[in-house]
Length: 356
Image (tube, rainbow, N blue to C red; front, side, top):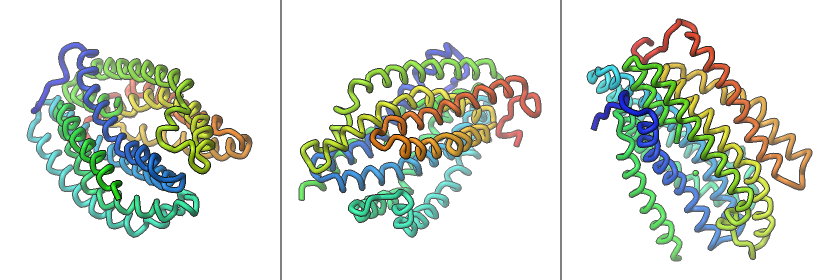
């Protein structure tokens, strides 16, 4: 199961490792998309809104879990890169114990707070009941979502990104099939952190930087292609998730298309700062990832969304662009932080988990 990622072509290693992870994340995102697609074909705008709001909450929770799990990938990857399998085994055991308890506590807490969460999300009155029901079901599954992401982080730390893809493929097929059954009556971050961690653990910091550069180029290329396509396909894509003939359906498609045309540029910038975040985590400086995200949210994303909604009430395009602008700020902060890390940071060398 253990695979050495510290030798061979950097481009080949990045591509062969990132593709299964990309497919895994894509399939995981299909969970929420499948729910939206199916509900949009059979129910009205209120039900679609309920699933949409619920999916956003679950996406936020999943991203938090993935971020926490990345710490396991890095610690295991550094140990594997240093050929210290005892430390790797210890990290795996600690990870399993920690996240088992965390998932149970989180499940109970979220179930108790489901209605306040729905209220904070400014859910329309007509969609409140549906959102509460949807989130209640999703929150019950938190231990299983956590288990999948932790097991996947362990596999990736060991250099295996294919097994998690197989797991999520089976789960995704089952999810879509069950959606229809019960109708009868949401890739570079983990790639850079895993590959970079092994390289840092092996003392090959130049290789870790090469991995970062490859990941950034891949992310920018993909983001530009996605942004270009979506300028022409925004409305048809939104139309997959709602009925244009239904009440307010045409307005949902029109406004959704406007928002998507602006938001899609975030694919370019988010891919870049995700790559940098993975590199920072691999170097033992995960606080930098937290810092640039918090700054971009507080200085750009939240005020940007508020101001654009007030200044441009007839279109959602500026609000979508505000999200991309937040990621652009993150990219600029990451570039500055990268230069500091290159110069040695606080202690003149890259940190490993064993240093802390």
